Structures are given as structure tokens and as C-alpha cells.
Length: 178
Image (cartoon, rainbow, N blue to C red; front, top):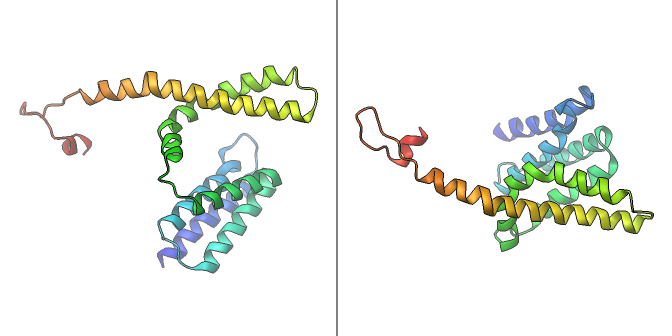
């Protein structure tokens, strides 16, 4: 029963961009989000039914292709399959996980500026590819610096904050979360 509910959720995320197709709304991107959920569910062994896995993947890929584009569908599905078949405990994935929030915050402004500047000088496809690679490298470097110089020190400072209960006794970390 729960497998059907999970698959229905993923398929709903695949259908939403087709129903609500306005470019400026978040619905356009839900099928890519659904692809991430699909990967998680398979890695966590929450959907064991092979036909359901395949139907969900085909539905998501089709939705991405129609609502965003074929290239994006190919990249999304390729990335999903790579994540399913790759050992995620390697040091490179751990590093990407560590800088992921910083990368999320800065990728758009940094990449936009690098691509905007580089596209003024790129005359052919090879030069455009180099501009794209430069944008990726700039984003990764900036995310790393943001993580090292702001995120890690901020976490250290935040970990020193102690909360007291109404009675004046310090709260345990578990009590602070609740």
C-alpha cells in the first residue's frame, strides 16, 4: 500500500508541470524534484516493485522532456542513474555534500556573471564550453570559500550557544531540538 502511495506522489510530481505549465511558477521544476525523490526512495529501498520503479522513471523523464526539454531530461535521468549506481561514501561526494548549501546559495549569481562575461568573448562552441567549465569551477571555488570562511565558523559559534530551561538549568541538545 505504501509503495503505491509513494509512486503516486512521484507521478503527481510528474503530472504537475504538465497541468500548471507557466514558466514563472515552481510547478515547472517539480518533475526534477520528483526525480530526486525517486532516487532517494530507491536508495532507501522504499519502492521494491520493479515495474513501479520503471513507470515512475519513464513518467518523470517524459514530464521533464515536455515541460523543460529533452536535454534536461537526459541530464536529469543520467544524474539519477549515476546516483543510484555510485558509492556515495567516497570523499568527493562527502566534499560536495559539505559545500552543497553554499553552492545552492551562490551558484546563480556566480555562474550568471561568469557566463555573461565569457559569452562576450566566446566565438565558437568550444569556447562556449570553456566558459561553462569556468562557471562551474568558479561556483565550486566560491562555494568552498563560503563554506570554509563563513559556514564552518558560524556553526562553531552556534554550537557555543547554550539555552536554559525556565528553571535555569541547561537544556540537553535533544531538548533544545524539541
